[in-house]
Length: 372
Image (tube, rainbow, N blue to C red; front, side, top):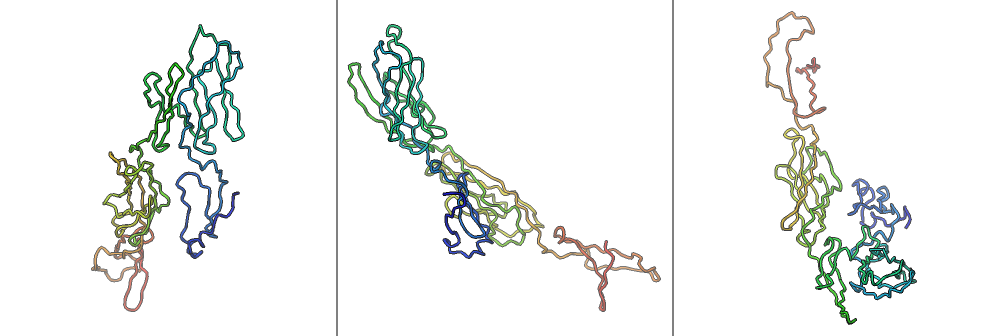
């Protein structure tokens, strides 16, 4: 689909009123960094933002695999340079760009590789002799053939496992990550020098280890809220993801008890920070809210993020004089405009809400007095 194409009408699909939808400042959340769609808030439509490449949606979770872990070839020393020897091709169950793409042969002193694309999309691989062989100089060669897929990074079976040709011991040769692939099938072959052989397969199931801490991301935040905000006012919405499995990936989040904010799980992986008690800017004007998320693994792994929240002032405090009444003595015959007394009142609010004006009142008229 091209950029700007219509995916669907969100307002109609959710049964919402368009005006209310516009006021709620809706947004799209994607679990990964790729944002292929965008929301037209004015019309309530979901549109294609970026052309979607089908290949980019595939997951590279399987390495290429040879049916046999070892290939034995008997080549006459009289073979001429350019002689070709067909090799068994590898198989990769992934699709698209993550499928088998190429091979590497090491060392390359005597042989090179040549690939031939087949009509079914597969690649036939041949080993080509580059220079004459001399049995008296060297009667056996060991080469490593590696199959690579098109993933980023590519997964290579030869990088993960190898086998001792003398005792059949299979060993790890590379790093295994449960989150990338948790199942492998290794085909092995035993062959005697008389030419008889047998084959088998090894199924490797990778067990998860709690090696990933929860990842916390804020979807939306309010860095300031009025002090008269009602209880359960949403301050922030965040997501938490842990790629580990089962209890290693189960996460619970909390905030310290010394802040007027609580955290609530709204759905799987989504949390809301809400006001948990009344706010009073005059008591405390800001908070550093630490959100801590920990998994249930043993030992448990945790992550934390900090949100700075400012409390906005509301004009909820009246000015207060430093005394409830004043006794002032003034001598007669003073010049008009002469200062005879200064009263002082304070207001616990802030900024404009704390500015105080003074007035004189009597039974018949109200007049403005000089400000101090």
